[in-house]
Length: 111
Image 1 (cartoon, rainbow, N blue to C red):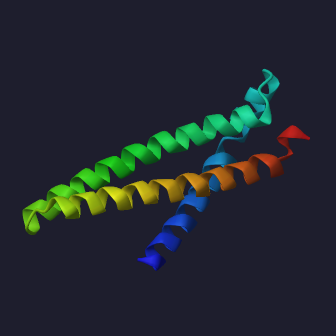
Image 2 (cartoon, one colour; image 1 turned 120 degrees about the vertical axis):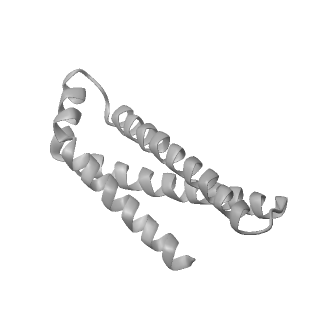
């Protein structure tokens, strides 16, 4: 389980880095129209949070459905799955925040 979480963190960090590298011209445009570094950072974090929330929500629903079909249904197991999903979402958001912050602060766009 720990290895899966570490792999997920590495994947999220790499995805955010690639995502920001591809959107350098968009950041330049936002800077040119007067957006501040924190505003751009907040925009990208909200976008990441939205996509991640949709993915985790759909994955949790699908996982619970498959679990109910395969095994005996208990409310406790459903609550555990939801708790794990919330924790995973928190880990993804924290990782995304640090990666996006680092990428935007280290980019040469705001020099």
